[in-house]
Image 1 (cartoon, rainbow, N blue to C red):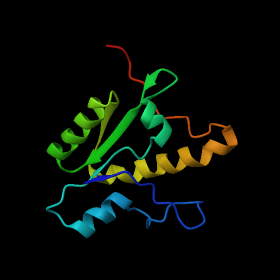
Image 2: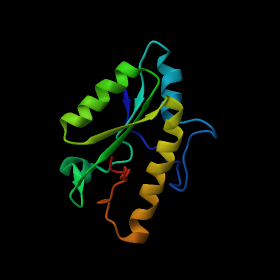
Image 3: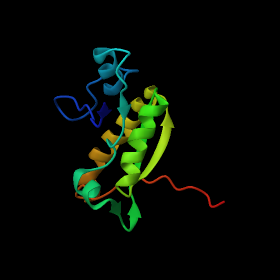
Length: 126
């Protein structure tokens, strides 16, 4: 199961999840340990996801989950779409991904971005 959500509260000024938890972790608790929940795609906006890039750069898709095989499937899905998957660790990292997603949403209007921006992890050249 891929959790793509950014769980905004009713007033859209914060996240609806309890402190120290993510929507992905809440989903995992609901569906049980036999289900494999992966957090991904929540830091990309729909129109940039369709284009697959921002400013000529392929979108990064941050992937968090506790099951390596499930994360590999999601990474392959992203890669097949010409996106750049980035494994950020266990499902608890979904907490930070949801915060990044929230920040991305909140800066769109003040910066006039029109939901055409994206987060990019810049890696040093080898």
